[in-house]
Structure formats: C-alpha cells, structure tokens
Amino acid sequence: MSNNNNKMPDYLASAQPNPKSGRAAWSKNIAPGYAGVMLWFTFWFGLTGCCNGGAAGVFAHGYMIPILGLALASLVCFVFYYAVLGVMGMRTGLPLYIVGTSTFGAKGGFFLPGLLMGLLQFGWLAVNIYWSSKAVMAFFGADASPVLEKGVMIGWGVVAALLGLGGINKVGKVVGKFHWIPIISLIILAGVSLPYVKDFDPKAMIALHQSLNPSIGPAVAASAIIFGIMTYVIGFFATAGAAGVDFGTAARDKRDVFMGGIVGIFASMVFAGGLASLVVAGAYGNPAVVEKLKELATTDANTLGELCNMSFALIKILLGTTFGKWVCLLLAIAAFPSACFSSLIAANSIKTTLPKVPPFISVGIGAAIAILLALFGVAKDLGSVFGVIGASFGPVCGAMAVDYLMAGKRWAGPRVGFNPPGWMAWGLGFIVGILPNFGCAIPAAPFWAMIVGGVVYYLGSKFGLESKVLPYAAADNQAKDE
Image 1 (cartoon, rainbow, N blue to C red):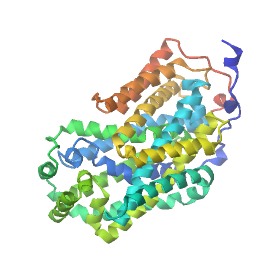
Image 2: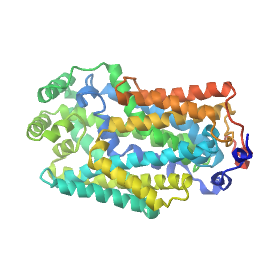
Image 3: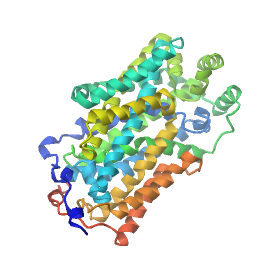
Image 4: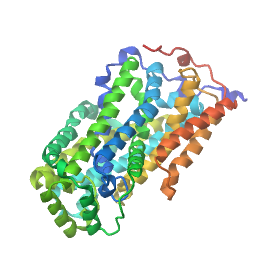
C-alpha cells in the first residue's frame, strides 16, 4: 500500500474531541435537540396520511394500529439507529464525519457520511420550505395569490440559508422556546377532538373518502399499516440517527445518551404522532367536523387531497378560522430554526469535504436547488423524500454500529483509504432501501436497508476485507462506560 494512502488526512489530524467540560446533562442538549425535530408539524402531518389512501388507509382498523406502529417504529429508531452511535460519540467526543472513517475509510469518510450528510440536508431544507410556506399561506387563506406563495418559498429558503451560514448561534439561543408551540398546539387540538374519539368509525371514514375520491381502494391489512408507518418514521429519522454521534459528543456518560434518546426520540415521537392520530380520529368522530370537511372538499380540489390526513384545513375547522390560522402561522415559525440548522449542517459537511469551495457558494447552490424542489412541488411527496433519506443513511447506521460492536464496543480509529466492507454495506443497503421508490414493494424498506448494511459489513470484516487502522491518538483515549 502506498505511503500516500497511509498519510493522515488534514481533517483527521486536526480534529479535537469535545472535552468533558464542554458537555452537559441530557435535558439540556440531546433531549431538546431531538424533540425539536420530532415535534416538527411536518412529521405528525405526514404520519396520519403515510399509507395508501391517506387517513383512510392509516385508520382503516381504528386508531390503535397506527399508534402501535408508531411506538414500534420509534423503538426501532432509538435502539437500532441512535443508541450505539450515541455511545460512540460520547466515548470519542468526535463528530460523525471523523468517527465514520473507521467504517468507510480515511478517504471514504469525506463522502460517507461527510458529504452525503451535507447534500441530504438540502432535501430536508426543501421539505421545510414547502410545508412551512404552506403553513404561512394557510394564515392568508384560500384567496391568497399564488405569486405570494412562491415569494414566501423563495424568501424562506434564502433567509434560512443565510442564517445557517452566519447567524445560527442567535437562532440557536431561542430554538428551545419554539418547542412549546407544537406541544401546546397539539394539546389544544386534542382538547377539542378527544371527546369524540369514542364515536370514531373507521368504516364510515373509508366510505366518506371513497365517496369523495373513487380512486381510494378497500381497507389495507393491519400489518401493511404498521409497515407503512415504519417506512415513514424510519425514513424521517435516518439522518438524525446518524447524527446521534454528534449528539453523543455533548453527553457526559451513557445515562445521558440513553435518557436523551428515550425522551427526545421515543417519547417525543409517540407524543406528537400519537396525539395527532387521536386528533384525526376525534375529528372524524364529530359529525359537525365531518360535514365541514365534506363541504370544503367538494368546493376546493386542493383540500380533497389534504382531507385524508392531518392538515391546515382540519386545524382551522377544529379551532375556527381566526384562531386556526394563527396556529398555522405559529407552526411555521416554530419550523424555521430547523431550516437554519439544515443549512448549518450542510455548510459544515461541505466545508469539511470541499474546503476550497467557499461555503457561500456551495450552500447557495444547494439552497437554490432546495427552493426549486419546493417551487415545483417535488418536496411535497414526503414518502419519496424520506425513502431516499432512509435508503441513504440506513446502511450507514447499520454498518457503523456493527463496526463498533465488532471492535469490542469501541471506535477502532480511521482506516486506510476506502474501507471495502463499509462501501459494500452502503451500496447493497442503498439498493434495498431505494427499490420502493421504483415500484418494488419492500415492507419497511429503510429498516431492511439498515439490516443489510450491518450484515454485509459483518461478512466483509469476517472475510478479512477491512483496511488497516491508521495510528490515531483519539482512538486510544476513549472514555470508559460509566
């Protein structure tokens, strides 16, 4: 092997672990950080309509099946995607793009997970731009000009990118305050809807949707609902799971890692998604709300598609137009810091992997693409977007976790060049995860992409395909379990 391959890349040589003095309790960093993502209204909006037929598919067997599927998916996210990577971050104090070099190699780490994480953030930014702009337009009402909507999308993306590049610290100081907006909104919506949950009739819901939209087919099996929810939730969480390494660097010990994940990931997901499911069930158990939905769907073609899940239209019906439109606007405001953080993560990842390219240019190009994806409605299709994200980062999480466990529950350190088992694991896992986007039905594909990534890495390691480990001081000075 050449000396060039054995040379330590500059980004590795200059990396410094986060010291113990820079860490804090899980309630001050990990939990609120993850909760801010899980409480994002786009997550619980999409959850209630993530199966074929929208809500008519998700709630075909009542509201307990989707809540069960949500709890199972949340547990999978915590155990299989976050927990091991969070401990890796805690022990090493090093960020994801450094720790990933054990799995993908010192050179390969530039691309996986480094550059890929940055590029996928623009997909997240596109989703944020699209749905946040829709929330803003819900404030102005159905008569608002389409030109205004396009302007909001462009302005939202530009400002988020600029703040992500230069002013994110100011945004970060107030982000915790925004967490209360979706929490309070869900509680208020639940207070209006929960008294009618007992009257919810899944068959009546399906019949209503079929009368308004004949393309909706018969009820799907309960197992298909659970798998559909797992696909959606895991795809949504995949990059956040890999970022568990970064979150873990702020943890003092394993208890911080686990408690932060239990509260910030599992509990936040179940709270937001579970309460949203009950709100939808209660809404369809209320005859007055159903009549308003029917009237709105027959007069507004755009609302017909939104009728099948939690939506801005449903919020305004449940809370009244005046109060409801303000709630929609506040939900948009609460989502804005996430757009800034997506830009920040993209800038940091690209700056690390492409140091000669000014961040203003790289993030500017990425933000422009994100804005176009929002303007043309590509970002509306959450299933496809999260399918790509889940396929991309499921294998990353699986391979990194297996690499860590096989090294004796420690980070082995950077490996020379492009570590073959890591890239084989990612390639085969990605193929499995992306197949549903091309019409191939694979239940819970992001989960199987992660499993394939882990299995392939294990086999590649057992066959002796791993690159040799480069001497690296940080790999020898890992914190012991508390």
